[in-house]
Image 1 (cartoon, rainbow, N blue to C red):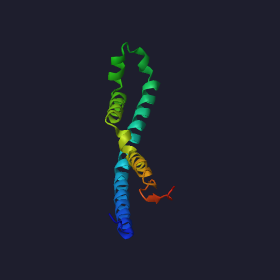
Image 2 (image 1 turned 90 degrees about the horizontal axis):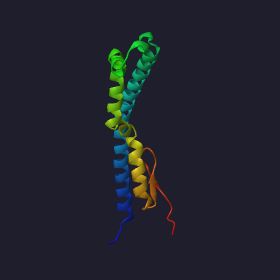
Image 3 (image 1 turned 180 degrees about the vertical axis):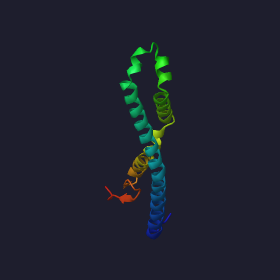
Length: 126
């Protein structure tokens, strides 16, 4: 089988273009989930502060009464737990996960890629 260098270069450019497209399309989704996570963590921290500072917290007998009295804190904690249970951290880190997987695959072909998906050709080691 004869390999045409022009055809190989065209294939590499097409592969690089597709990889850059995949990485760029993950960006807006990651930003959206980062904003949601920061908002939930901020709400949880603010409501936790209000929970700790509340004078009436000491007079409740059970932990159930505490959480029922501080509904916003309870709701924020539940939402935060659900976000992490559904894998929001993987959605945020999707670009890094994809590029690291491609780097592992491309290592066998004496290539790599940067964080934007651009191919890096390495010199032949033989």
